[in-house]
Image 1 (cartoon, helix red, strand yellow):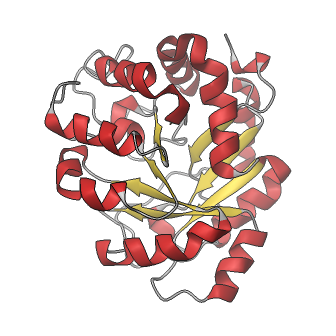
Image 2 (tube, one colour; image 1 turned 30 degrees about the vertical axis):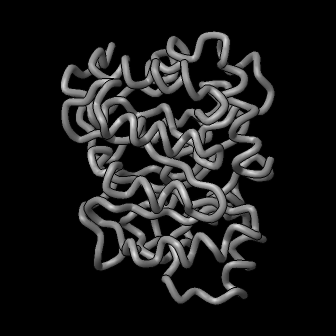
Image 3 (cartoon, one colour; image 1 turned 90 degrees about the horizontal axis):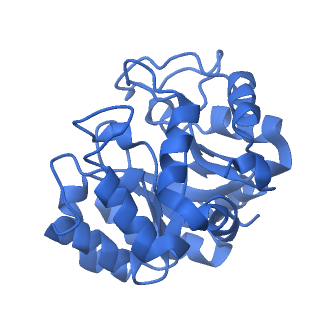
Length: 268
């Protein structure tokens, strides 16, 4: 069933790159032009009403572009920002008032926040209803499982766990991710299979067993994302085809995953 049938369907991971916002010195690549106006066209074509704008690594700690996109998209938009470990309470409140509901921890190339900042920031933002948005190589879940299971507040993991090597549902690293999900405070983005698939489009057959296992065992913890504009992916994936791939995994859980779960996580 298309999101067009679901009022409040949400895309939980979008990056916006607008002219006029300078890249940070730490940027690892020059991003494509991806203004809010272009994403709005995609959003409408997919039948989505809500979106979460995730701070891209290229802008570092400067969240202005991300917050500008939220302002342009209106009440249906939220932000995930990146802040220094010593951010003050006034700045967190300012970001909250502008639509921020999470802090991104990118533990791969281009990320700025260290593991040492995870627990202190999670503890500070939990009373605000915010979450930690985490992207790591999924093969590292066993190494970090204990700290993630006891992390204060809410957590969301990017892109089917982003296992950067061959993985099956029986692998210990995938089972480690599932144990984190079992804590009841963690969500997972069943999205962007191209990030790790070796088989590629249109079927991403090597990722299907992982996505299917997540939906089968953790439907109340799954959300969906386009990952638009698919930076550094060539050729550029088709967002409608990606949504169709995901909907084939969701089955009868589509409304829960597209509407209800993100509403709980992002405070709609």
